[in-house]
Length: 126
Image (cartoon, rainbow, N blue to C red):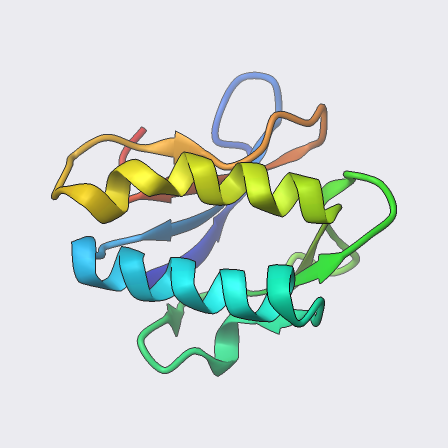
C-alpha cells in the first residue's frame, strides 16, 4: 500500500491524498487498524507508523474532531484528516467492499467540500 499527494489533479484545482497499490488483505488490515485506533481508542492514527504503508511524498495523520473538516495541510507534506467518529464510521462502510473481494474500483472516503479529497484505490486510478 502506498500513500501520496497529487496537486491540481483537475481543472478546478482540487488535490488528492491517495492510498493505492494494495490487495484485499491489506485493505482488511487497514480497516482493522483504523477501527481499533480511531473508533475504539479514539486516538490519532499516523499512517507513517503502519508497516505496510509506504509514504511516497507526504504523510497523513487521521484525527478525531468535533466536526468533519476533511484533509488539510500547511506545507503539502504533512496532512491531517479531521473527522468525527461518525465520519470515520462512514469511511469504514465505504471501505467494506475492498475487504470483501479484489476490485479495480475506487472510493473517495468522505463527501466534504474541501480542496483535498481522500482517495482509496487498489490500482491508483479514478
